[in-house]
Length: 157
Image (cartoon, rainbow, N blue to C red; front, side):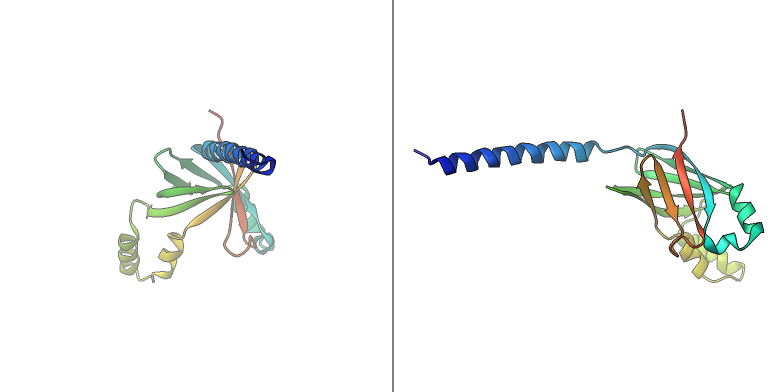
């Protein structure tokens, strides 16, 4: 016959298993970021010293469509960036695969034809991490937000 301590331990294990199952269900259901988002640019400290740049940022919008097939389209100033996305608990990571319909090698080739280097192309294809803050997605510049950020809100359907 099992001891009281053994029975108590079995009950605790049973409760932990049930809790683990519930937590995994909650984690799997998660919030869906699939849909269309509109971003407004907010100037950072470096840009606030330049009134012309700050005015341009205030009037600029950015469109983001996060698709259910794990792809996205990001468009700023009518320049489309396409790629794939992944989701972690507090971030949406966008990995560009095409800019203006060109993959990275084609973009480098075209940039060289125009006398440019590959540094800007590499920057254009860098991975973007959008931080989830409530019902908003925040894309800060990689320099700690000194140049600004884009705050995305979901478009109402």
